[in-house]
Amino acid sequence: MEIIIQPTYAQLVAVSAEIIRDALLKKPNLVLGLATGSTPIGLYEALARMHKTDGLDFSKVTTFNLDEYVGIPPNHPYSYHTFMETYFFNAVNIPPENCHIPQSTAVGHEGFCERYEAAIVNAGGIDIQVLGVGKDGHIGFNEPSSSLGSRTRIKTLTQSTLEANAPHFGGTVEAVPKMAITMGVGTIMEAKQCLLLASGVSKAEAIAHAVEGPITAEVPASVLQMHPRTIAVIDDGAASQLKRVDYYKQVYANKQKLLSQEH
Ligand code: F6R
Image (cartoon, rainbow, N blue to C red; front, side, top):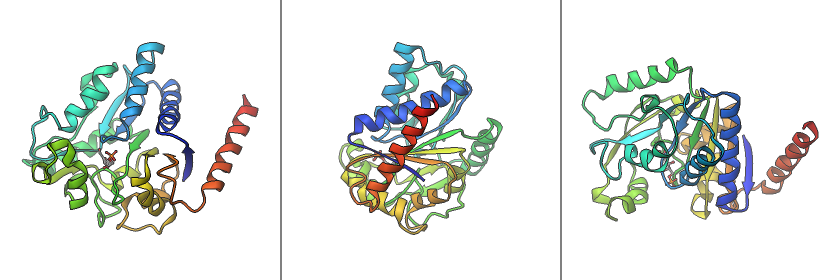
């Protein structure tokens, strides 16, 4: 796993937005896997600015979101449909028919999950999967103990995730939907590249386990150690429990030096 440590969230955002911009310039019909939550908001805002001010073109892009709560309508103010429209889709020119988000109902979910997986394959697979990480190490809504080979399905959320998401639902855990449809860990691992983002000391333990701990279903993000092309872009807070910070910084500095010599 490539670890890029930046001093601040703003710098984390700048680096990750550049990674996506460069990929999009190389492949205009990029297939993006997208996450919600507070971490990628700055990334979406940065990409929206690149669209508005530099004309970065998203017209051939296809997107697949990781997850959606079960049991709230897509137009619910805290659904991930609403989140994506607010922070990204309304601000760039991705054709609406190219934007895919799991449906928020449990009715017929098995068929839906199979079709969602097939749609990803039909689109040519995900080129870059944006990921956040839960304090408990989840990616998507694959909570600890999720099969590392799992596919898109319904998962029950842990107490830790319910508490983390309560502020979005009026501050009460009771109001948070208890289940979500999520891409599986196996689905995520099929993305050609993963871009894992984490900010702040509250994510430090999860990042330390994911990057330097054993690969285990107890920390679903740890499976990314097996992914051939994962870049983790994290800030100093999220990096604060890593053992090899100096080494990761040295690796990144050397890579930048090599790249500047090539250009
Ligand atoms: C949401 C998702 C989750 C979040 C994770 C971190 O689509 O996939 O795994 O990425 O819960 O959330 P934040 O960024 O709010 O800390």
